[in-house]
Length: 494
Image 1 (cartoon, helix red, strand yellow):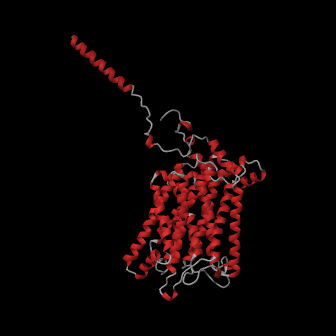
Image 2 (tube, helix red, strand yellow):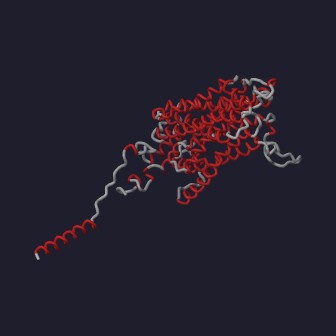
Image 3 (cartoon, helix red, strand yellow):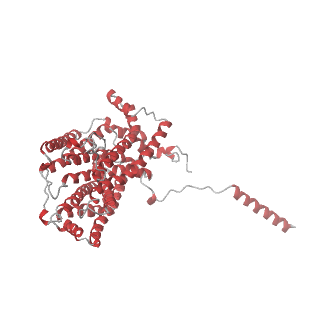
């Protein structure tokens, strides 16, 4: 009996302890992720949302630094020189340029393709990275979008003045497909006309996309403005934004739609620009690799220009907590990836020229590397293929001055790429009696230098009157905007 009782008591005690173990589960404690897996925050030093607004809005509210006015006057002077040279060209004739047979496309079309390529990074950062939910884009997308518009404005000048009789460029039936009394219509089978539609569509959609993203920030500047003129202008363009739930809902839908529209434009516009060459029968141009090759090169060159502008901007305005080393490093990785694609395309062009068996095609590529323009080809290889490979190493990706130097090399290399493609394919024709050597005239060179003046004048005005960084988007990726984060209102760990 005692044994039974003891056994029963033991079973009861065991049952009780077992029941207690089920009713009182162990306390789970959150364990922080290993340090090597933690991501660097997109805004450093636990800055508040008010600090972000004051810092970014203050760039255009406070008086500009002392360097701004000399930089603006120098850029405006270069821009004035460009327009003076364009007027000289129109009044005198295209003969003031160095192009001639057989190189009747040369410096001007090189500049056109260069500037169109520069504009691709803005749309890529804004649209494609937005659709892929890459939050790091928020600190750099506004400046990149503005750069897109200014680059398209620079690009549009060169093909128009290249037509010779510029006053016909906007004449119905010449470039614009408007019926007229004579029944003259553009040649729709020409890729030059495709350019008109592609570039104008790209510029229009990019402008609308940039403007839609600006609306919440324009309302912020409107509410902070003390000058009546500034307040009126910001109020006019902010379209009555109040920040209500309905406004945000409509804004996010519109932004998503524009991102969806811009994404195919990234691929289509420079593909169509490449058709200017690929649909011809000229050896060195007639190749199917051009559309993806041009797109990759455009993204490569565009990111190079973004870094060329942003690295000094973050230093001059002390924006290191918003445009962090992580942002610069990620853009360097994009440069490395697209630069590798471009290098692969260079090698594949030689392979296809050999494998295709066309003696003219093979000669065109041998002439690029070892002909009279060998110096331009190897500058291109050094800048576009060799220099990005420094970014395999973390120190180079996180050292601002080194990144800036490499970005300038990328810009130089991408200009030489277009020069090599255009000039070396034309200056050696099928007939040796037609061979020539293109040398740019002083009008060629200073018109191109002046186009940088136009670009920088527009960019300096942009940072003077508009927020160069998207205030609302940067706030959206901060911990304070996350309801599940302790700084955003969450209590304890979940």
